[in-house]
Image (cartoon, rainbow, N blue to C red; front, top):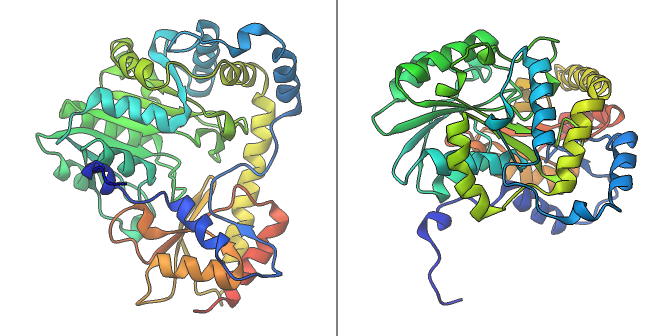
Length: 390
């Protein structure tokens, strides 16, 4: 290749999960079964009734055709109704655009909101795809400092100090990827008020909102009739309905914002695939009990993971946890997270992600995703960490 690549793209880190899988492919042969703590994928299959419904729809000639850019009206209505039940209120259909996962919803939001040179304040540790996208677009991610004593909770005073005339948004993930930390509804309300005071947007990625431990709304922002003045929501149905490969997400914002975002949607993907929309509609209308059972199962799995991992002799320390994740401090001073994570692949047949993939000054940490291992694998995972040494 002799032509020049965009310098913005060259500045983006290589996809961390792909990097780790490359380590695995080149690791020495081992008789140990792999323990995959790398990617947040539900360990359970898609609901049988949903799979059956999709099989029936495959013979419909329309299933292979485009839909409106923002998605079919009946699907967006189902999403609106589902969100209203979950939050106590919610967006109208005109305030929903279906997307290729939450990641594409984020690209829609940022390309509609920002220009090159703008800033977005990012809660650290950050979901790695977010700063990767910002840097690719020439938008500057401004990271908060990670304080382990706060266990992944934002410091509003620090956030406000980081706001400048170039700031366009505050960006947070709740429950967090990578820490699992759940931002309380009262804090989210204060973040919204902070965004409103500075006339910027609060962007919440709520990919894991159906895995909260309590049967309470994740927040009450939709109860404010003017929520869309400063709030943008990113949704994923991939974890909720075990549809990760269907790339099923949504952007929720004001109708005026969605109208502008459709310019990007049309030129980027046109529309979310109709088969994915079919799955979303069925899930929203029929799978509440199935989702509730999986939430309870994941809460039990989280508790068991913390118990097993919390052995007094284990030198790896859980700093924060929740939903699908544990954010762990490794004990090897002088070694960064990438070195430790690679050694775990080669010596313990465990794959996980290094802390530095999630932002600056995080070399002392690892992200463990326990959503894609069943409960019976947890004691073995804890044992391998307990016995591991560099």
